[in-house]
Image (cartoon, rainbow, N blue to C red):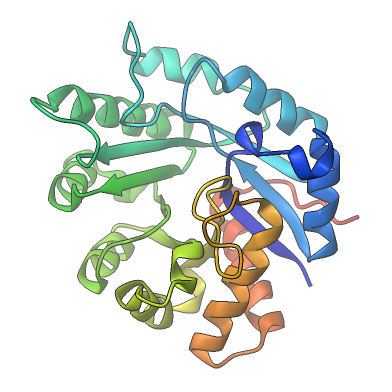
Length: 262
């Protein structure tokens, strides 16, 4: 069995259980069938660490992006993003998007940042990793206005309703489900996880955040994407092996990353 963690932050993992050794954490993931990981960038300052990790491990790919909540002295231009994303290990732009939960006041700067990421991604011909929290209407509107459907990507850590999922899929986006789906009260996300066509579904940990049951409340890690896969396969009434095969195929189809099997 081969699983993919389509969204994690390997540069931010709590490696205390592994004596500070990332390699041991990746071996733990491998032992549970996790054969590939996308290490997602959220600040430009730590992009060097994200890229270093991706270069060190053939089973790790990288993205380039600035999270919508991250403060920065000088906003990156479209050209800045394009220049940074030239490395062959960078397979996506993001995470990018809108987050109205943590930011207040006039958020036009956030929308401008999002547009710059979309435009850079289109020129680079790399898919988008979209973060959206309490900003559904504006997220969808900007994706439409910027013709993001011509590029496609993934709605990461999806936490919206079925209507939003349908709109996103109509714009050529995949839906990625995180460990939230394992929470008992996550009924809306569980419904989306059951209804999304299997060929449009991805899974992720978003580690070190949002650890799934049975590790809820603890630090998350790529190995735990196995619990996300088991939960959704059970919800859909299919085998874990079938679910793993299809979501893995989806990942490599979308991101066009080299597929390494050890």
